[in-house]
Image (cartoon, rainbow, N blue to C red):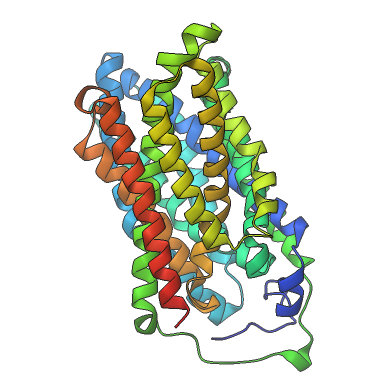
Length: 424
């Protein structure tokens, strides 16, 4: 495994420093990129059906169906793009001691495509050329967004030691969750801004986030030249089992999260909570995301006491137990308490996902392993969207709860198996 020259600002910090410290400036800068990515996807998800309605002349329901097809296709592309560019960033790190050129190139390209989406709708109008360009541009944008997510997220391993990764990851969960709550809470406000302003804000935020990350990396602690060590990079064939486990865990967590957050909790809110509280579903959904984000700091602190993989396995078990209680239907108050328990566990899982991937392989393969993890997530979302386009009509609530519990328990078993592999 090659360690970059200590004179380069993008080189990894001293391993001794990493084991005891978190580089908070760099972590918060990374979180700003995470927040900007989330904001971009929110704007895209809100406006894409509107663009399709305007360009294709479809009614809202048909436009939503076309949007769902595009999102499934984009998720399927992510299965290949995420590990491909994650692995490519590992090579850039070895060759040029930095992943930033690849990240910056991906961000600039995605920003150009992103601004192009409302531009072709406004200036192109409803014609055959625009009808071809709009979906192609949307897919290209999603491809570019996937191209730099893994190289960016694997930088977390350079900002914190292995035992501190979940605590550092809690900042990403916090920022991503708070930004994610914008969609259920402020969709009307975003639509009132108009597409040009919304897309410009999201694009500027992403560029500013990457600029802040690049600047923060200049101030990373440098490794003394006397401690510089050069070794051969790890070979992928020696860690195929580890990488397969990461891919599998990513897919199972992706499926579980999609079912839990998108189906189980939404159905429970509508059936149990909305009627008793009188609050709109949007307010409740946004509050769930905010709570899950804020509690991340607490679950991150717990990870200092309990090993991350063990904490994730415990969380999966508690989620399955909570789902079992939820299926019994004890009423609104009990449902709210169970949802709080589930969200605490979800927060712990979100904190530890990237940390889990990074600790499964040597650092020289960090981009590839994070890419495989996100590729698994994307694959699960694509498969779910393809096989079950209307889960509310095709799966009963008890079956959804059972499938969710199986997905999370299977993820826990896979992590336990991965722990045995890495301990050899």
